Amino acid sequence: MARSPDCAPARHSSMERSPSMSEATDQNAAQTQPAAEAQAPAESAEALQAQLEEALRKADEYLSGWKRALAEFDNYRKRAEREREEISQNATVETLRRLLPVIDDFERALGAMSAEQAEDEVLKGFVLIHRKLLSLLESANLMQIDPTGQPFDPTRHEAIGQEPSDQVASGHVCAVLQKGYVYGDRVIRPALVRVAE
Image (cartoon, rainbow, N blue to C red; front, side, top):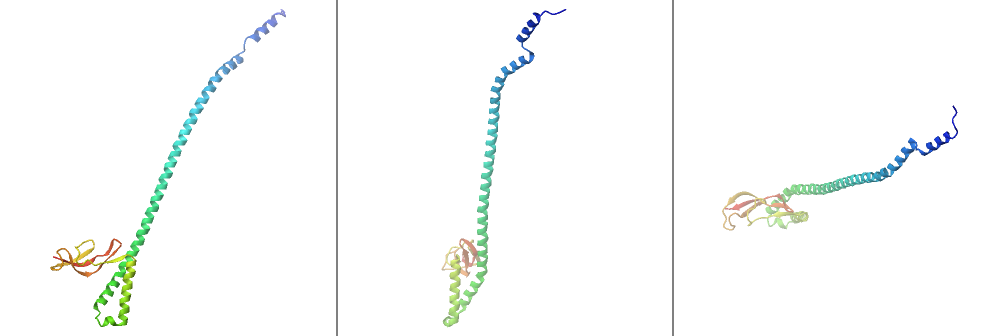
C-alpha cells in the first residue's frame, strides 16, 4: 500500500514541533547553568578567603619566628660581650695578683732601709721605681687597702688575731700586717690585720 503524500509532511511537521531528547537536556542545562555560575563565585570567594587566612597565619608565624631569632641573637651578642669583658677582667686580675708579691718585696726592702741608705743614689732609684710601679697599678685601677683604725670588714680584711688596744675601739683594725688590694670593687687580696678586743 502506498502512502499518500499528504501524510508524510504532517509527520515531518509534528517532528519539528516536538523537541528531541538532546534539545530538552540542553534547555535544562541552560536553566541550571546560571544557578551553578552564581554558586561557583561564592565557593571561589570562600576558598580564596580561606587561602588568605592561611597565608596570614603563616606570615604571622614566620614573623614571630623571625622576631624570636632576632631576640635570641641579640641576647647571644650581649652574653658574648659580657663573657669577653669577664675574661679580660679575669686576665687583668690574675696579672695584678702576680705583681703583688713584687710590691710586697719593694715595701719590705724600703722598710728595712736606714736613714743613711736612703741618701744612696742607687737606693733613691729603687724608691722611684717603687713609686712608678704603684702609680702604674693605680692607673690600672688597683688600689691598696689600708684599714688601720677602720671597723673590721670580713669581705676586705683577714683577721690574724686580736689584741688589746687603747688607741683603737673594739672591733676595729689596730694593726696591718700585709696591705690588701682591690681592683675596682673586686678584692684581689684581703688585708691581713689584727683586730682590737
